[in-house]
Length: 184
Image (tube, rainbow, N blue to C red):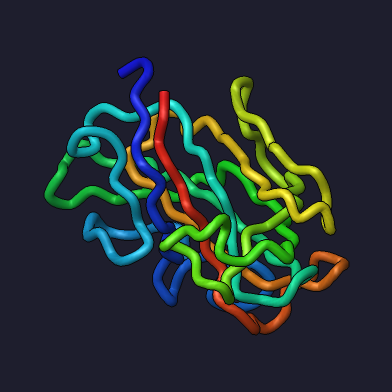
């Protein structure tokens, strides 16, 4: 699948009982094989997968608001497809700062109240050898992007959490999300 890429799609948060559901990054990381909202099946029916994701986080929060975004891949722990158990493996966690750029050049996908991030900082995990963070810093108002190797994952999930300047979890005051595209 060399050279393949998909159009950008909107990410969805993991279900209400997902990793950011309670406490400081409390986690419920095992589930049975139904695909609730917030999970992305990669590749052709999940059997062949791309090598990387490009991710553009955004929010409707005011400029300078910080949030954490985590990306998980899910690894099947059973050969029995009817009763497989999947285990979440964290790939990356990044700290995102909301820019003043709203609507992104007239895009129909972001309204005038939604802003991309202008700073992304890796706080945990690894983007891999071919992954990169394109970020010009808070206040630059230049859209930031992260590319991340997904290690042949069949299922992916994102989750988002508002944080204070010290990285401590706070109540979500805005919508947070990301565009993502698969490529190899």
